[in-house]
Image 1 (cartoon, rainbow, N blue to C red):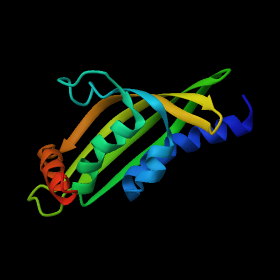
Image 2: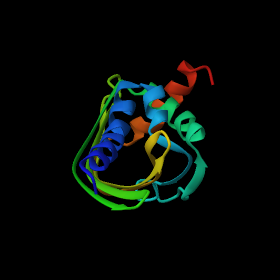
Image 3: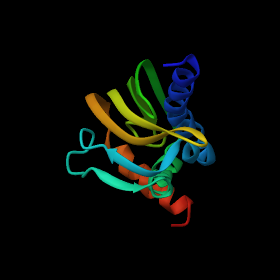
Image 4: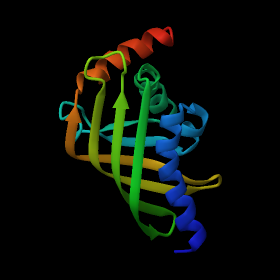
Length: 156
């Protein structure tokens, strides 16, 4: 694996966090392939693994993160494995979410992401994300309250 590949792969993974936390939806969309597989069943067991477009994924998460007052996604310890034009990257993660007008304003999860990336003409892009949650802390009810608030703010 070249240093350039490793750098670009880890940058895409870190941009996942940065795009959400800064609400830079153009940046966030730019890190994904057109076709995605997203597995968040560890976070919400009633969910299903979803195959969807990058546009649909970003549109789906935008109301939640628009409705939160702040978030901070921290990722560390990337382990990258490269096989030609596909890579896998595992990173530890902690994701803190805040809704300040709630009496219990914080919900944080910790665990890791397993990402699959593909090499495209535009560079490395994330084509699959699997979240594994090891722990939770705080008030998870703020997530649905934020989604409702964000949907109203976006006029959806």
